[in-house]
Amino acid sequence: MTNETLHQLKSILRQKEKELYSIQKIGQALSSTLNIDDLLNLVMKEITFLMNADRSTLYLVDRRKKEIWSKIALKAEVKEIRQKFGKGISGYVAETGQKINILDAYHDSRFDPSTDKRTGYRTRSILCIPVWEPLSMGKKPKLMAVIQVLNKKTGSFTEEDEGILEAIGSEVSIALANARLYEQLKKKFNEIDLLYDFEQKLSGGYKINEILQSILLRTLQTLKSKKIAIVYPIDSRYHLLSVDEKNQVKSDILPEMDDEILPPEILTKPQRLKKIENAFKLEVKKYVDPELKIFRILPLVFREDRVEFAALVLSDQVETGKRTSISDNQIIGIVEQKISRALELSFLRERLIQQERLFTVGQMMSTIVHDLRSPLNTISGFMELMLEKETTAKERQDYSNIIRLEIQSIANMTREILDFAKGKTSILPRKISVIDIIKRFQMQVEQLFRNTEILLKFESASKRLIYADAEKISRVLYNIAKNAKEALKGKGEFLFRSFDENGEVVFQISDNGPGIPEEIRDRLFESFVTSGKESGTGLGLAIAKKIIDEHEGKIEIKSGKNKGTTFFIKIPEYQKEKNIM
Image 1: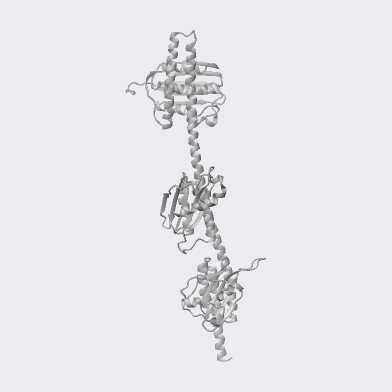
Image 2 (image 1 turned 30 degrees about the vertical axis):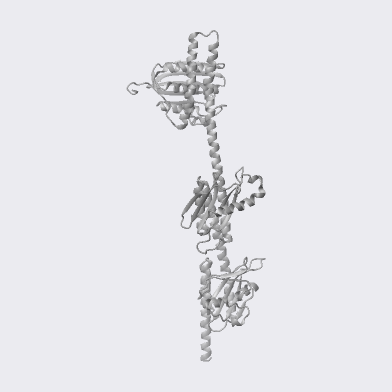
């Protein structure tokens, strides 16, 4: 073996070592990242070195636009190249799927010199191969990329170079497929995360402007846009809410829109819906920034009487200055759904609040009417007694006094309920005898239980003085007696006692009825708690407790199923040194 032959063999060996080393580095590069941009940078750098070329470019295929494009162009000013299928060498490979190895580009009619002219670069030799998607069972492989290598430094590209580049292309196809799958999974994860975040906001907030602001901020961050805004209806007026990349939030109320733009009879004329939607879009454009280009109109059909609209407007992306992609459109679709749902929930919540307010007012009115019935019945009953021939002048005077008191009670009753609703203290206490309170109460109860089979028992042992509002205390006792009558359903026993105990006057009211249901026993003194009463509203005992609390007294209850119910009302005895006016 001659020295020259030995030298050639050593040279070939070094070249093979260099190729193996480069192929190993390309393999490491392919497995080192799933980011497509990073991947392309690493791969093309190693391919350029391995091919001993001046520069290399990897074009990705855009089937929808029938273009190939690349962000990578080593040693050149051009950072992104786009060209149609069939145009230029790489475009021809993309269209035909055939590899091309050219010795001199300017002697090939397929070569497009426009890039050279734009950059000042001089293309000579070209090796260009197609990169196919990894094979799938039963599916025809599709072109996913084109690798183009330019200007081999030691002459032209050989068949050996073609084989090496095709082998590398197979590895690149797998790496690209993995990178794309990773990007798809990443976007799906972002969508799921976005959905979860939106659901949290919808379930955790009640103010519509705060919910929408939060949704817009998150959407802006996800799509990396410069600005996003929404026009939406609240309380028959349209509002504009916008958020920019600096998280600056602006909110405005738009002028009222003409009935020609949003007529009230939309639902009755569905053929006009599209026309009105377009008119609404033109109207919204008057009030949003010109840079907000992407327009989505959301028909809001949750109202019973008409269709309303919301408008979602979005600027270009911050980094690319481009409109959103198809995958971003999926996110925008999610945002549209959540905005529509947020507006619907806001509308339903407001309607529910209004219904609850009306219901509360109705209950209050029902309470007033219900409670007025008792003194009116008392007045009616004593008026009938006054007309009887056997009634003496003294009895008529007593009945007249009772009627006067009941009329005063009616006036005070309405004020009492209003004071209760406002949380006001409304008692006017004075020194009074327990005997006087019982005397009035007994006459009311006897009138209340007329025409029933209920046995009345009165045991009055206390003769003390208390510092109290006599009318309000009588009202409490009367309300409890009225509840007992309703519980007894016209038949049973009713017991009233008064006695002194530990510095307090105790009023005891008992019946032998079915008892208070266990499910409401602990909530009996709360507003609107009632059970088994045809016309009860549940305010009587709540008012009673408030009155007793204002007297610094206590109201207690003892009840059992089929064992009746007993109320104990305890009022402090009058103490001169404590109650000096």
